[in-house]
Length: 281
Length: 227
Image 1 (cartoon, rainbow over the protein chains, first blue to last red):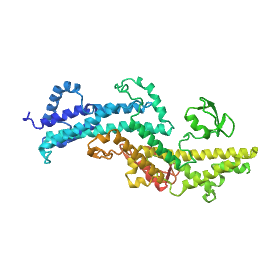
Image 2: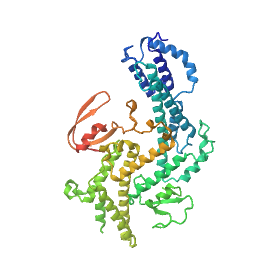
Image 3: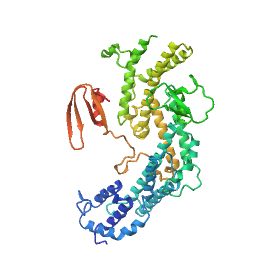
Image 4: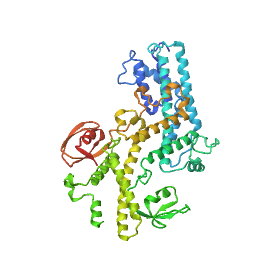
């Protein structure tokens, strides 16, 4: 192996490539090829071509040897991918699927493990690490570094998707109790990771419930600055001042200015949104 | 109140609209609000909050109208009743415009919170109320992340504004998305295409579709308006 310059770098790169999903044209994969170019400038002219000459041969042979076992190994980034898939699925759902507590923990754990790896890799150098003499280590460090960032972004994306959903619910006037009640209908969502049965009664994590409440307060505060407008009112341009409604649920006594079922739209929007009334015509 | 007065006050194009000095201030405010509303809804990024007291005036007007409605509700004379319905309908429309405008802005701010908070020039585009809202919202989000997972990270990774690897974590709006503008005077339009850039000579009244990043200058100079 030492006879071929750059082989350890190459091997490392291949591991990264597999882990990060370079086969599917992932953006981090691209970053790694650029890093590869910058690590080996004195061996090959890499501007333009991604891999050239004997490195390509090395790359291919390693690829052949390792591809079968690598594909079976759990890899960095896999869990993050799963989170992103969950987030993507959540975007198209009307309800909020259960929070993936285990998956989130596992991805966060991966970050901590990688961080420990970095620390132990750097330890022997006592702060005098020179990337140009230790290319293999530099490359591993880079991979670990990028894997950590990627996991972080996956976590952020997952949580932001869910908070967006929560905020939408708050804007629509949903109640935290309504959310807790909707879990019974959720578990038929196809490929799930077996987290549904873990004893949680709500599809929200406790942190998300807090967030839901806090955002509700924030919105109430913001709305309070525009009392005459009713910011959560209908975003459809108003056509008629009065509308006919059908009562779907008993809502107790409701005072309106103009008698029972012929009501001013602005007065009953809340009740329509909450499902007490249905707009007719 | 005469029915002609009511109809005249509802007519969006009063005959005097050619000479601006004759337009009553309410109508001008309505036009300004509608213009702000259209522009805000069609651009990818947040536009500046009107600082000329437009919304203070609108708020006052809405408040006065609500009081008027309450006053008039008292007597059940069929004549005033009709006027009341007209005024209430008009009021609902004003409220809708303001609501839609504000919601649109909040939507944009929510989508790119850090982007608008962390840049001084962008921050001034928000009204004080919006800025307070945005800061608090970002704080809530960061706390939520910290409690959910960020808190267990190595300290160096707990920020939300990394720029490692030349990829900024702060998402920003796509300024290259398309908008429609109407030219208010003859102007040269510089456009940036995917392959070629070009210059277009536009006449007053032309309607053009182009990237917001190209249209921005024209709109800010008052040479064009968004439609």
